Amino acid sequence: DIQMTQSPSSLSASVGDRVTITCRASQSISSFLNWYQQKPGKAPKLLIYAASSLQSGVPSRFSGSGSGTDFTLTISSLQPEDFATYYCQQSYSTPWTFGQGTTVEIK
Amino acid sequence: EVQLVESGGGLVKPGGSLRLSCAASGFTFSSYSMNWVRQAPGKGLEWVSSISSSSSYMYYADSVKGRFTISRDNAKNSLYLQMNSLRDEDTAVYYCVGVLASDAFDIWGQGTMVTVSS
Image: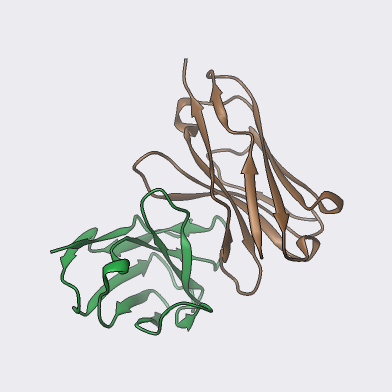
């Protein structure tokens, strides 16, 4: 199975900050990497697919990069509605696996 | 509007069974693969099972293999998860998830809670 490791597990940031979350795969997954946002009590929402493609309707302050084993999710200017938990997920091979999540909290 | 609505969750004793359902609307259900993803209380996301559009292929996480069965009825626009021999560790919110426009989980239902407890 492909293990996905996110860092950090949590972070505190202020509105307007630039935030970067990293995700590392235990083996190369090419660009088969997706990012999700989840708010408390809600279903996850797809933000980025194929490592860097922005899902329709997602604000352009979200961006993704990387290939192979190392990936990043960047929020260019953190907004109040962005405080949430973020998960990466590989779609290279079954079992599809998720990172453990990164919680973005208000500083 | 593209929508997935789960039902069938509830409280069940260890060793018991439960069948989850997911009703799809707003898209051509028969054209897309579907999945179940779960989330234990306070924990992260765990993929459970996938089924191809025509039910030709089904995949399971090792944690549920041999106990859970995924199925679909394209005529009824519905996805199912039959869960047998339930364990405490199966307690979670179960999400019905579609792979529509990308190679990612792009459509999610609201989730249904399954609690396994004596």
